[in-house]
Length: 506
Image (tube, rainbow, N blue to C red; front, side):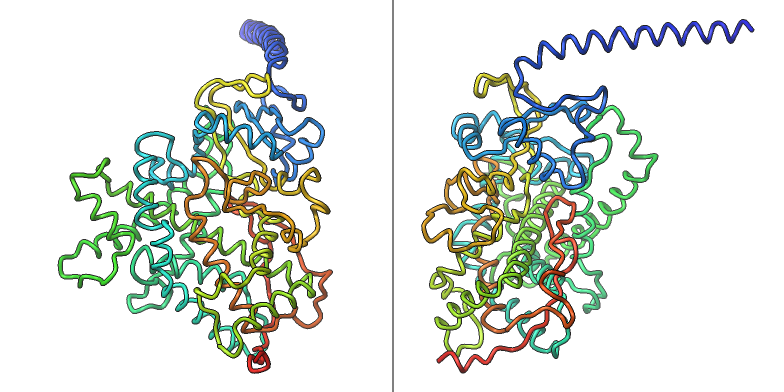
């Protein structure tokens, strides 16, 4: 009986310690709560994790409706700030952008971004500044974006030809547009496409990419309780991340080795790998790129370049199917301007004013990353008299901002015409519409994405008439959002395409 008595005594002592510690923490927490922004009551240990839901941006929007546009949460052991209005976003981006330019790392992102080598996930500092400057100058400047025109037009023409041969069979537009965006990025980054069944029997790169995107959009328990990272080994999450990482890594090694092969013919135009390898050898550059850092930049280009554009095109087409009058008006504008030409060329995009309104309205309702990419405060600061601690994770709810009744009439409705009288543009510094973010950590590839989105949509609408498969009504169309880093439509968009009678538009 003695061992049992000792064990019970130990348990009682442990319980007393736990109660005392909890009471002390609650007392300290109450004092700190008076200085923090308002927010819902937190449970012991888990904080507000139970209030996130499957689609966090919607859950946070509901909470912000109660607690205000500057809201504080505790997600596990992570202090978290949620910004849900254009007013607060403007105040932060204009006055505290540097303080809010840190980047927290999830377990998956750290590994798959090659120890934070990607622009998206790199911590703010000299490396991030240099690699962003290089990427913008060599790939994402307006001049460089224009130089890739032939690649975009060729891939769009191939997509149009594939759809034309569908013979009234429903087209999986989600898969088709994702593949198109992936092919464009592959050609620009690697100099060629990588498709299943190719001359070397390559596995489709976009399948590896999809696995990477799914993992980057996932959360592990260690993302909220860093001291519990060991659980990732037990539940298989670490194994899955490692498996995908090695697929990606092997693929990049083959690509880089191919580009380093002295017998490889010199291309007329440098691709992104050529550029990064050239910079790696240049002693005059501000940084000396490692092989892993090159791989991190490549991953970033694919995640941002493929996912964002593809998701926006699909949400736009889904909304147009649901709003046939808007679809007809957009088609008439494009067809009237293009006439009998079979395809829309990129230099004709500036003529489509209404199409540009549609391209603003779709990501307003369906921002590709509703919470953007999380930020992290790099030092203590004060916002509206509230104390924001250093290392606070920051979510900017772009969906909530873009559906704020203060700035938008009938915010839940798809109405491109609203931009006839609103000069708001997500390519400018308008904080009411932030699908691509803002400030130092805003998406540097916005021009690249918008040109591709407009070109794809213009051709889909010019070349084809669209309808839902037989037996499917507009009310049946599933507009549910999928969980992930980028907010895709949960179910694929299946549509029937009929080749338009272009000659009628003389």
